[in-house]
Length: 102
Image (tube, rainbow, N blue to C red; front, side):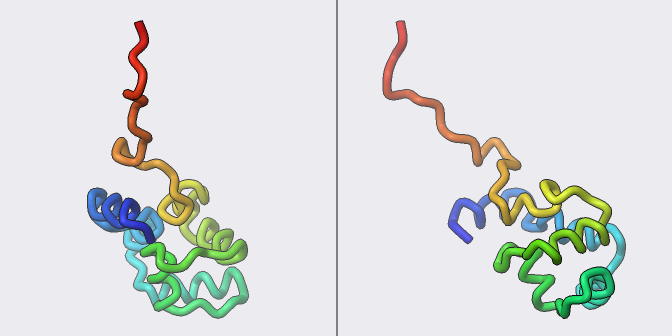
């Protein structure tokens, strides 16, 4: 994760939408991993889910679809921290100040 993404996470309290969705359902990482595996048939564990939530690992298509189903949320919301979506004014490009227009 780049410095900008790390500072963005710190500015927003550090929790991704993916983590907030799990916490809103009062699920532990282990419970969420078990529920995800029941949906996908894969073998995610708490450590992998934590890496998804923090952005240390990117989700694949099946896990992404399973997490959307589990948390009943759109991928652009749950995975903005992985996809680099602009979620703050701090991530917008600076205005062009190189040329004055008259």
